[in-house]
Length: 113
Image (cartoon, rainbow, N blue to C red):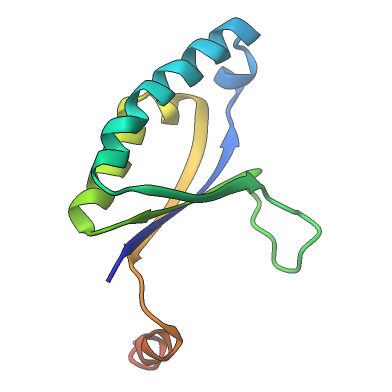
């Protein structure tokens, strides 16, 4: 079964202090690493801004959801993100693991201690 990574993140003051040119340079470096991740079968599912008006909304500003073919690819993704310097600019919370269907997840919840 596929593995998934959901990121929740908010810009730090270090990001806010960057000029537009510096931000574009950072985006270019992130983009340069994407082909290697895609070669591992990693797919960006969706990304966006958190809608704070939703019930029980996350406190973070942005989200990203990634699909990976296996745990090794998920580890490569998390490591690749860190190598870009991402965490210097964004406070990030990661939730990652193997996906399952609804019944499988209900079974996981039933087994929770």
